[in-house]
Image (tube, rainbow, N blue to C red; front, side, top):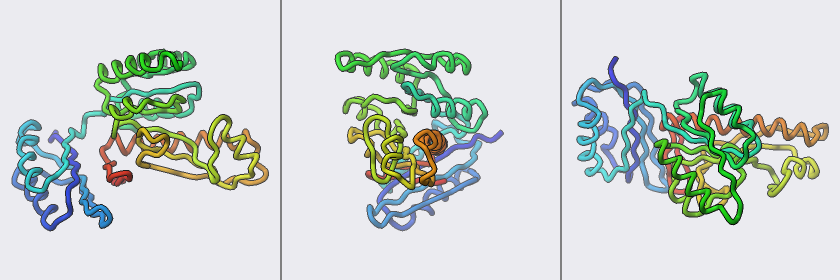
Length: 282
C-alpha cells in the first residue's frame, strides 16, 4: 500500500502558495487525497492541510526536501505519517465520564491516538485503566508536593513520547512551567455557562440561577486558566423542569462529546494554531 502523509503549514499569505505545494507533490508523483486551505485577513496568515499518498521519496527525504519549500515561503510546516496514531497520555481526577468515553472511542478505532498512560491524583480509575490494558499512575498532588508531582508527570509524558496530553476532567491547575512545556499539545475540557459559574458544584449554581443553556468548551492549555485557544464548543438547552442532577448528566454528555471531537481533530492534524485562536479543518 502506498504510504499516506499529512502535511500542515502556515505562513504569511501571498500568491503562489497552493501552486508551489501542489507542484512540489506532483513532481514527486504524489496523489493528493484531501486538501483544505484558509487565508485569514485578520492575521495575514495562510493555513493549509494536505493529505497525500506517495511511494517515493522516503519520509526522511520528503522532510529534507520540504525544508527548502518552507524557507522560500517562511512556513511553519509539519509532515506526519497518516497511519501512525498519536501517542497520548490522559490526566483525570475523580470524574470519569470523559476518560471512559475517550477509552471506548479509542479502542473502537474512532480516534487516531494511542493511549500510552493514564495519570491521576486519585485511585478511582485504576480498574478502568486495567480493563483497557493501559498503565495507570497514581500521583497525589498537594500544595507542598505540586512541583514534585508535575516533575513526575512530565517524566511519564516524555517517557511515553506523548504528542498529546488530554486533561479529561483533571481538577488541578497546571503550573506556568508545565503549561509552557505542553504548549500546543495539551487539551482541556470544562463546562461553559451563560452566566459563568466558577468553583465547586457549577451545575447546582446554574440550576439555582435558572440557566437556559449549558455547554462545554475544549481548548488548548495555557498559563491563562481556561483561556487557551478554543478547539470546539457545544451547548444544550435547559428549562425550568430540569433539576441540578439533570443538568449535571446532560453537561457530562456534552463535555464528553466536545472533548472527543477536539481529540479526534487534533489526532488527525486538523487543528492549526492562529495566535490565540485556532483553524480547524474538519
